[in-house]
Image (cartoon, rainbow, N blue to C red; front, top):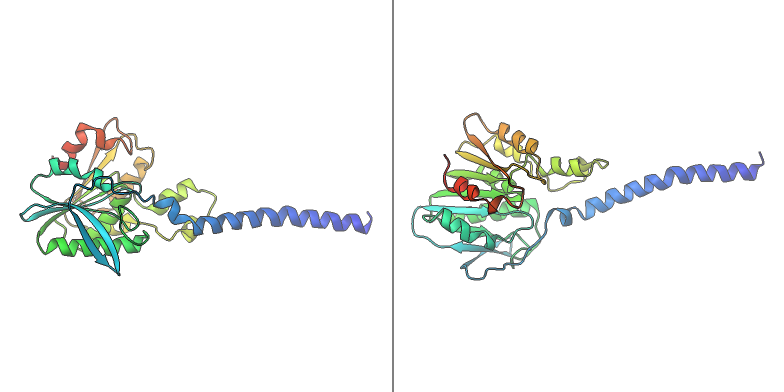
Length: 261
């Protein structure tokens, strides 16, 4: 075979190896750079009727939609990754008439400043809890979907009275690895939301509410989280005939929120 043909074949083989590797590495880089755009979908605050609390954390103003109530009880709510929490406030006001309500708009959501990240949201959650706790010593913390990870982490380091998790997951890392099977998610992901890690330190009554047909968070993920809580701490209730986003439309959902039994 002439030398020129050998050289061409060598270059072809190099390209066949290098190009796929380069493409894979480029995709890994893109996944790393844009990962938070895949996790967080900031929403505007559509209901401006609720009083707004402005919380200053790290020189960032974080908005909190509220329903004031004089008394010892309060409820702090952490919503989903694409949720306008102000829309959920009225239904919770009905379910918890004797609680002051505090629904936080994550950074970048609902007019809050800054950009969302796991650590920033965790700091905001603790700052809000400390402010509310000064006036309401009995605090029920509720987290839905993405917010379930925020809620369980907060409950592991603050004197929460009760914890309620709606459509919760074991970890975001686990969900991401399931979706992006070909990529080293463990090494690329920054915001892992490892709920299982914090569940082991929870000692207050905890309720998990899952959707029977959840198309976003597999039942196995919720089950794994449930089994990470100390024995006797948590209960799990499944709302029949509901999906990840439709669970709140079920009459059984509000009953499950307000009535532990």
